Length: 141
Image (cartoon, rainbow, N blue to C red):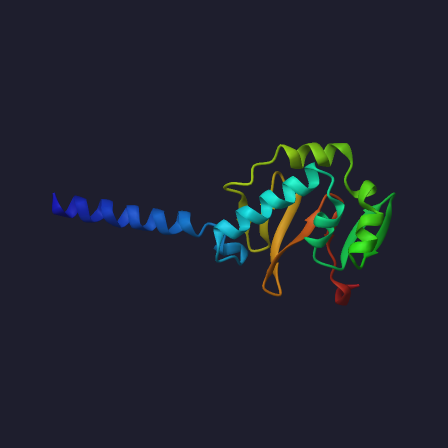
């Protein structure tokens, strides 16, 4: 009986530890901060708050617009292209995405079915991919 209690206790401790740090594989040490960031991003997109969304993005970011690759270097450029990046389909998917228990891997944390990806950049959570935009690696071009 004691052996069974020890096993159950060990399982509960392991499960609790994993649940409290589910985004660690993506480079995050604070699940709550990731959830708050995701909810803020979702709300900013839903309310068409271009400035907030643009401030949450890591630059430069690469986009494919009208069949052409475009490098977006800053918030001003992102806001200028906002309508091209966020079509109605993307807006709807982000609006209906769950900001709890998101998928995470070595690349970061994924919102929805990949509509957006978050990563730690210089100690801050940032959007590194959204819709037709993805992380830009200048030294690989």
